[in-house]
Image 1: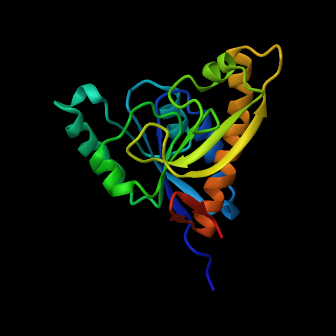
Image 2: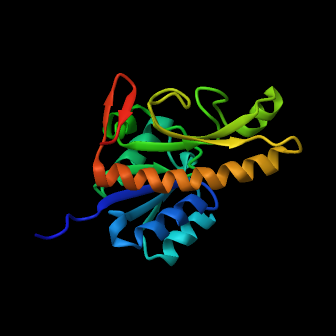
Length: 205
């Protein structure tokens, strides 16, 4: 009996690609059960694309500015992702909200990570907002993306204590480390074990 083929991951990036690198490193072990088959970006000249190239992974760039309308961009992104026949799409620091066509095609297998314990502190300043509120526990959330902003079904969460002398930078850095470990662990579990989503509850056998 042969081992099943590894699950196909398409990773979307907008910046340095540290989460992408963590997935590339994990996927180097056949036991992980997944391989990164393509990396997409919304801009040229970023380190995330360099990381993909260094790993021999095909890349594509869809800049919003390159298309007449946001819908045209969404259609192009959807088509480019679909070409690679992904089992799971990972937003690894991808800073663009995808549109209706993308979510119709991939909404039940498009995963994003957020640097706060949702539903608290959605948006792009999770750690800053958590500090300003005075919480004692911050963290990261892995979830399936829906049409809202950081509102999709939650896959996993990890807590990170807030220290008395934390700044936005120090808290963000500690959350990033926990977020990266959680992303790698749960992407692996999703592809190896499968999942169901029932009434917003995500179950992994």
